[in-house]
Image (cartoon, rainbow, N blue to C red; front, side, top):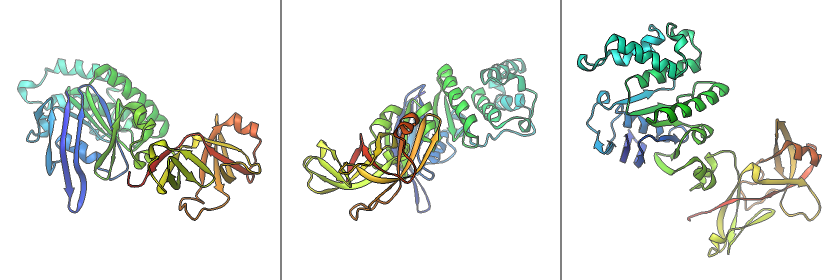
Length: 361
């Protein structure tokens, strides 16, 4: 079932949670709402579910306006961060709950409920836990049961609010893969909220980046990573170094290096921001006359195949308020060992690639 979000606005007192938000979600699509705390993503999810009322705008399910439709009639499955399982009920009873509270005319028979719950527990690979209570399960198991319970009523739309937020990193990773596989089997139109960019990029068909109650960018994971639409998106998706400089006739000049920026060829001496990802920096031992950012290797952290370097620029640039800040670089661990660099040595860092944003453009 497709979802159409049209011009949704919501205020809590003086706080604008959502400002004229519009978005289309295709039937069977898995979409991530990604952004920092307070950006409006959970409020939007709750409005889609019918748990919250918008001040303006409308939500359409399969072309039908649901603004006045009660949450019980929306055929929405909702999974919260903290499982929200009934502690006094077994796993089986938790999953069966939504079916048992259906109006008598729509309620399946006990045999049908039993078969359905068993199938769902098999789907989430936990049929062997049917008689346990939530307190006897791990966090990851509880979250999968919460998902089975949401799916029991055969929702047309599945909404997940930070579904793995309370779990440790290893379990999160396993559940992310599992959720993606489950979605590929079921094709339920799904929207999930997360502040974890890795989660959004790994699981979703499309990522919706939100900031300050607005949508900054919508696109495939690859698209938003390769072509960030704004400085906010660039800064939010993964680690990044920010350099302040000047754009002049197709070139951006930043301390120690310059970048070709043909799209800004008409600009003369405009303020520019250059974003460089840590893996896009080349690092070499400093030699007299080398062009690039001259820095001291303050710290090198080698874990597995990657060496993460923290560089302190040698001289601050008065034109560059960001200078003096630590620069992060990433190299393959073997390449770092081959360079033979030691902490405290002077190095030169040169960007292979940078993304330039010019103020006011």
